[in-house]
Length: 194
Image (tube, rainbow, N blue to C red; front, side, top):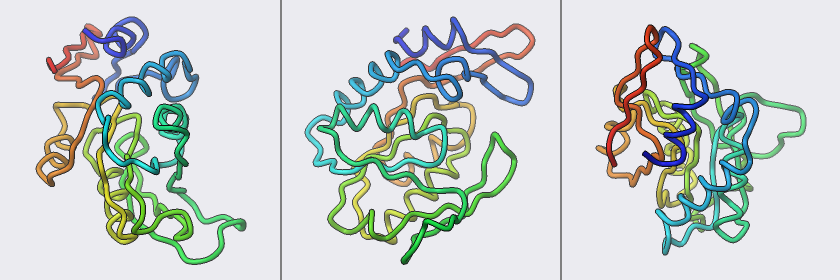
């Protein structure tokens, strides 16, 4: 069992509806020491690739992406915004992304001035369930002409179709913890061996 799986067993809570609550250390309150371990592990797994930009999606992926970026020589982090704001100007890349957790669809946007064909991108996110967020980020990279060098996920729900879908598209997907099954009644979590 790796460091993230151990932390999920210790502090994660399984809820009805295939929800794994990890807000005490991952996506509400953030354990920066844990994020640093995650960043080092992603740097090890994607070593040697010409990554010059990290791309994530608002909001839970931002903290992880920032720490990961330090391990790649402080490359810039760009995050897809889930809403238009007055300070966004110029041309935008856009994609529609359905959220498993929030049960809605977001229109995500990235300014064209922050992503282009010279970029070699590592996509980072906290969770992978159905793969909709990643497909949205991939489509934005495709539109920009950027190269997706790899995808790093903290927690993948292996019993949902996202991981298989993204891997079948030919992308290198590395998840630090893959949940094979979980039971809300017992709180039991089983991880896939990697």
